[in-house]
Each structure stands twice: as structure tokens, then as C-alpha cells.
Length: 370
Image (cartoon, rainbow, N blue to C red; front, side, top):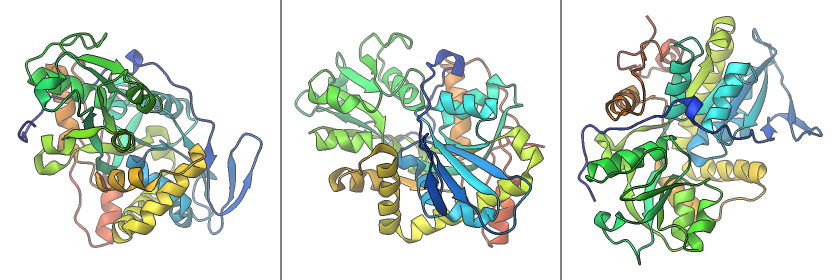
């Protein structure tokens, strides 16, 4: 396993280069609930209404989106929003969530670093702002131990990533380059075959022998381990202090300008949720799994849930320096035109919430609004 490094090249491919995946037809809300014919949950909000009737929140049905899973399920967001109703929608991929944000279909999203940067760059800094962190870690390289015993054994093997240009795909391409191997980033062909495979499909492909391993987020990594794979590398070991952003909270700039009180309330809900998760990890794990069951139709079994839950942490800190490093290294690798990320963060509302709780402010690595 490579030694930890203080800086890494990480890359991103523009949103336009990514295939747009379908939005999952699942929406959730908690409070007084009633399902409509489209599978959406109507929430009866109570208390004083803020400046918007409704706030629409997007997220993924992934454990690394635990803040959204738990905060929505436990009603923490709705409590802070009072009479402003929460509507939530689950997405399959970052590009579709960015598309929904740009189209005004959602207002706030939990999303990874790659689509956050690409969405900001594509809109020339006018479409969105990162307003908080949400999670760090939760990504592993897992392999067939009969075929791969050391990193050198990866040469000539077929390794899956979730999607062309997504955060894990680029992390793996970067790692490959650091081994001195060559792979065409678009086709995935080279010294290692990089196979773009949906996380839902990857475990079956691995079990059938079509894949030798995968660089994937949780819970897919732990699911593969349950099928006999072994962890060759935890991506946390490649980052200073074993921390790197895997999930951000973003907001439409239009919604932030029009409804700052609603954004602040959502951030209060996010901070409260993260505090509760860290103070009650077993209860939070069960809540997140119940939310996944609601979204997917079945919960994660204990042998997958437990190791997956241990491999990431929720955090309010956006770990801005790691986002900046990802963009810089992407440019150096020729995978992204030079983006101007000044202003990508607006951490004023979050720092206001943190200060009110007597906690230190978080930094924007010089990429905040002026």
C-alpha cells in the first residue's frame, strides 16, 4: 500500500462529459405523512413559516449522505424549518442532481466534490454555492484476493469505478498514474482496465468474475467484501489526517439570495443531525439503514452496514483544502480546464450557526465569497 501523501492529484471531468442518469422517483418527508401516487411523501409542517412555503432537498441513497438520510427521517430539518415544508428527492448521480438544481427542481443538495466543482464552473460561478460539509471518507479499493495480493498485481486487471469522471473514477485514475502506469481516461483502456459500472451492478459483476475489484464508495465496498473481496486500500490513507470531502451541501444561488432564513434553518438541521449522529452512532446507523430501506425496498444486512458505517464520518467542515487540491490536480492532469473557484464557498450562514453554538468557525481555503 502506498505511504500517505500530503498532496495528491485528483481529477474531475466536466458535467457535460458525464452521462445524465435518471432521477430516482423517490421523495421523502417526515412529520404527518401521506404517500401520493408518484411515491412522494407529503409533509404537514407545523409552526411559523419562514420566507418560503417549501424547501426541496436532494441527496443520494448512500451512507455517505447520512446527514440527509437521518436528518430527514428523524425530522430534524423539519423541526428547524417550522411551517416551511420539507420535500426531499433521491438521485442516482451527481449530474442529474446538478441538473435539477439548475432547473429549479430542488433548492439544496447533498452531493460529492466533483459535481460541485463542475456545476460551479459550468455556471461560471453563478449557479450554486457550497454552504457546508457533510461527510469525509467512505471510499475503498477492494479486490479479489486470489488474483490481487499487492498493488503491483493490479496491472492487467479489470477494476470498476462508478462512472466516467466521477470522484472515485478520477481518484483511481490518479492513483494509477502515480504507480507509473498508463490508462486512457476516456476509454479506460491501458495497463489497468478501468470499467465504469453502476454501483448497483458492480457486486454482481464481481461475483460472476467479470471484475477483479473496484474503487467504490460505501456501502458498495463492504458489499463486495461480503462477496469475498478484500480491502487493498482505504482512500483515507492517501490524505493528510485521513480526511477528504466526499459529500458537500450546496444551494442554488437564487434560493440563497431569496431565502437566506430557510438556508440557515436547513444548516441548523444539518449541524444538529451531525451532532446527534456522532453522539448516538448506533441509533443513527439504524436510522440511516431504515431510510435506505424506505428508498430501496430493503435494508443493508449487518455484515455490510457495520463496516461501511465505520469507514466514514459526518462533519460540518467542508474540508475546503481537499476540494481545492482535487481541482488543482485535475488541471495538472489535463482533465479539467482551469476553473476559477473563487466564491464557490459561502460559509457565512454555517459559521453563524456554529458560532451561536460556541463552536469554532470552519475555513474556506481562500475560496469563499467576498
